[in-house]
Length: 326
Image (cartoon, rainbow, N blue to C red; front, side):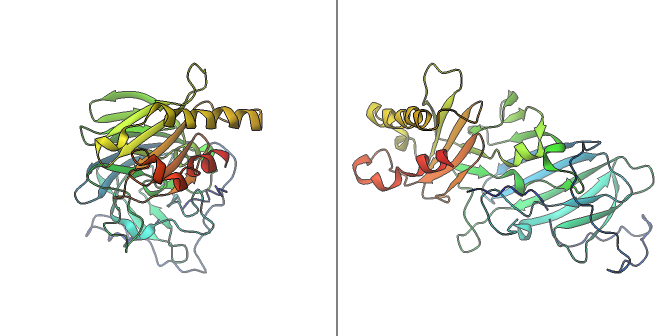
């Protein structure tokens, strides 16, 4: 069962101040340091404009640019630490690189919190209202490093890996506007609602940080979208992504088995908790095979031949019912 604590929180090597460009703050000790603001349920006075470029597939590097408005003199930016479906503070802070923070082109001094490695303390010039943050997310290139998220044919994006956010506010109180650039021949699926698409660039509708973190993206070169509840005003879709196009072949009786899943779940529970739902389903042995529930979607990955060798892969067919029930 997912724990969605979103006391979200990041790391990397501290940024040196440019020579003679910025005033260096006085020594900070644990004794004199102000505490990181505890999250409160009130509206954040700014927003996050988040732009993600996932086209660097060969190196498995995701480039992130974000503008955070509503900045104050003591702003602390956090990297997500508690993640959906985990039971420990496992945010992959070790995968961040090249953090740069500026305001209108001028470097902003920042320091790592001496206690909380997921926290970055900003020291902006007086009157600074927004900052631009750039960094790279280094997705694992080997299973020895971590679960694989990117191959040449498909990828999975977890937004909690790609954002810094201001401390002191509940995640549901922080507005976020997101855009995503993918390889030109990729299709995507997500519980996020699309505002516009221009070739490889997708703009999503404005949402909250909480909903963003809970709405991962799957994308790939070989994809198929199947309707699991035809005629319903509440769409339920199976979004398939595969290593090869022939793996997407789904026979009518196989599709009917998953449509029956939706009908039987409605009979069992008597209601549904979403406005629409997407099974994000990868058929791959090039990225991780996983299962993780979300509010309006689930992350699902199983044997590449789950459909093409249907009679030999019955053991994987409890995955979607399991995550749907969660």
